[in-house]
Image: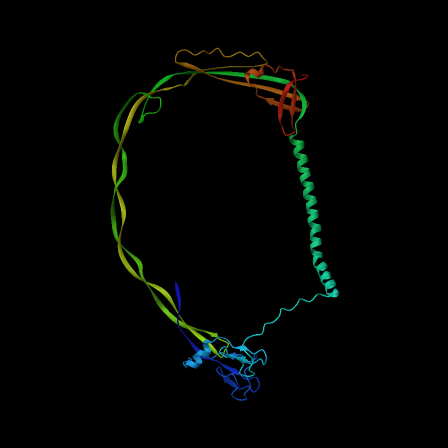
Length: 363
């Protein structure tokens, strides 16, 4: 980290060259020491060279810190900020109050020229507006096409379809209750004849303590180091300059040592219940399937006995056709009996593949 601070400041005296005779004068002089000409607004200070002696005289210091010189409004000579009136012509220091100038009314020719410039600058914008209108029209046409395509694709329309095939399949799975024995940490839900005993399960971290002591180095006691100085010069515009002395240092650290350690844990035993238990399972012990077409549905004859149950699954499929269009439907058992082969139905369809039965044709 860099630390830059001001450690001192002093003032030095500049010089200025007379424009009348080219004599080089001291900054304290307001009249040329050679020809007597007053220092005017065109005669700027030349900055004192590096290493110039600092100003220590109290009277000169008053002039150096008083602020920049001002120009006399009558004779254009430079006056010190300490002067109450111009030493050359006696003009008072106070500036006269000036009235705000009125804004002139532009002439007709100037207005016409301004209008011409405005119209010329607007021409590229008009061309840009033409391109924007074309893009807007193209976007509108594209949007219209997308809307029309969406309506055509998803708008439903009525037609009729004929049942060309109907098939069914019924499967019965016979599940028989079976008793199994198992063991684990704890017992599952629904288990019975449970018998448990406490066993060693493992360990867990407990009872923290300090361990692995060691020495560690770290940065401490920050201090300034590798310092250097430099000066900056600020012209005061009154024949003097302020020289500010800066000190720039780095931040250095000493290396210190301290003891540190880790945190370790003892391993404590953990005990849990190890249980033996009985539980039921329902494996499939028999399966029967019947299938066919049309409306003659007959279920498998498989029946459940004691400690048994039936899991029945049914699949019904009906195909509708109209011209070259085909729709497949998977109705419930209650609805399947309605769809006899060869029957006609009023339907509502979309070009996107939507299919909805409205009822028998003609109703």
